[in-house]
Image (cartoon, rainbow, N blue to C red):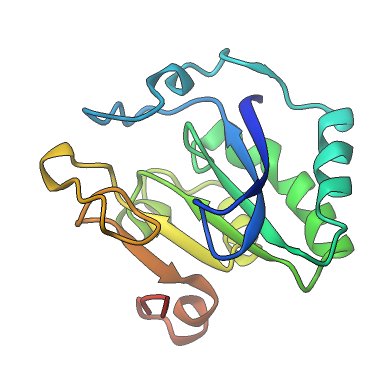
Length: 173
């Protein structure tokens, strides 16, 4: 997997001060995407152990609330496979830090068992995510007043409660 960028102490992509990993690779191709260069799976730099360690180090301070995964799209099949071992390390070392993820795919239509983006890695990866912002960016529904999402169709899902209750629970911001 490649990554496009890492931001440290970011406050735009989830609650609190966060480390943000922008992965490369996205097949959605949303009109008006703010980072179309990240659609290519070969864009950016290799996501290797040195990069993983750099991110893990950045999560150590108490003022860092957690990690956000976006891109590109972390839920592309190739990215799920690459991210899962890393997320195991994150959760082992920082069980109290929260994880947000942004995907252009729709949780119940694309990511559940039997759906088009479901892989052998999906369930465990989703279990490591606390908040999932799902749905494609729709330029005609763009609204800059929305919190943590770009268009009105997207949802900020409390993934822990959603998995536990087997129904979509919107995150209370």
